[in-house]
Image 1 (cartoon, rainbow, N blue to C red):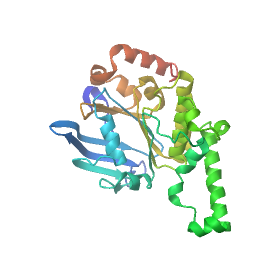
Image 2 (cartoon, helix red, strand yellow):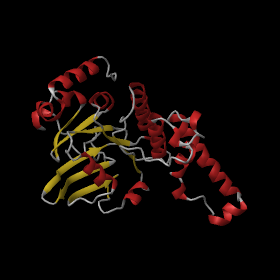
Image 3 (tube, helix red, strand yellow):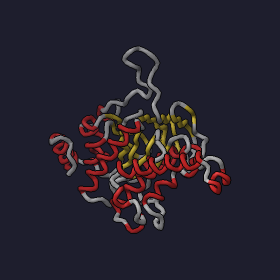
Image 4 (tube, rainbow, N blue to C red):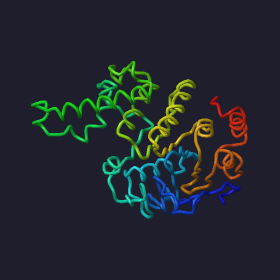
Length: 292
């Protein structure tokens, strides 16, 4: 049990049919990171399953960004293990993890502003190559043309999913923040993800855009059967859109549980949410989880 009574789930839950436990897409085991004498993360354990949206919340300085950096391969932990689909990837580079299905968006939108929306999304597929090398490009071999059609079709599919078809040919740098964030999300999922990391995805969005983003996240996890881990300060968004929530405080896991369990956790109230905000979130959940 976590502080205040929130249940901490078994990282490898047993199956109902008694067979082997389900292997999560992401598993952190005993992860610790220090900056000099400061502990940014201490013995953190966390899992995210395929098809699950897991929220990561906590006050400023809780270690959320450091944890994202460890998961994505930007930072190697001092201690502990990172696994993707059961494989230990602790020493893998960010590029190798990305090519194994890990995708990430950023708090500040990271796009190629001078390229069109479609070309931004297409760029995420370039690492796979076009097939046949330079000769195939020059000669226009049938296999190369077929591969290019397939890539373009996938881009069109994702643009439609993210509501970007109407602006596909516009430079991303000319778009408002809501559409630019959607373009970054489209780029993250065009090469089918196994794990999607979203770093404060609602930052800078208005209420309508936040609601649209929440819908898109659930559509993506359903269509791709990927695991989603998101860091977010909008507590209403987290409570209304996440299946499970992990609360960090001072680099340690304070509580893990369902939105209802986290709302009722006294330690979480004290460390982060606050009595007034909890009341507002509870009202949202009682009204069907709508964002306000």
